[in-house]
Image (tube, rainbow, N blue to C red; front, top):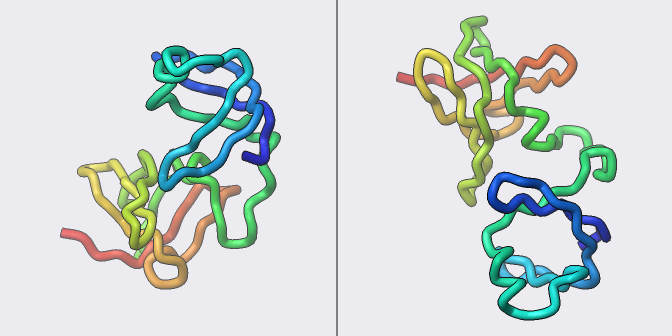
Amino acid sequence: MNYSQWWLKCDGDWQATELKEGKRHGKSVIAYLQGINDRDEASKLLGCNIGIPREDLPEPDQGSYYWSDLEGMKVMHRDGSEIGTVAYVMETGANDVLVTVGDKERLIPFIADKVILDVDLADGVIKVDWEWE
């Protein structure tokens, strides 16, 4: 709610819009957007993704990452073997999970200093201590 300009992705297209006011409501957002004046217009926006340009976002704190920065990074086991590449990150409630693709898909819990040993954004490598079958 700290950003007046939002980008909405509906039906595959991103479109800029202006936030007049809004608030969180559970896991959802209630927002009044410029040019949306009735329920019928608003209902067309249900399920759209909300985006903010990266340059408008603050730098993450030490040890915190934007999920989009992790996507595409190589994941290496502590022994030097390559596990795969981060396809995406998902939220589970307990902790975030890296979904990796390689010889097969693997789910790796994002638990700093236990499972996730190092995230090197410059080199594009995440080192993990994770055993898999």
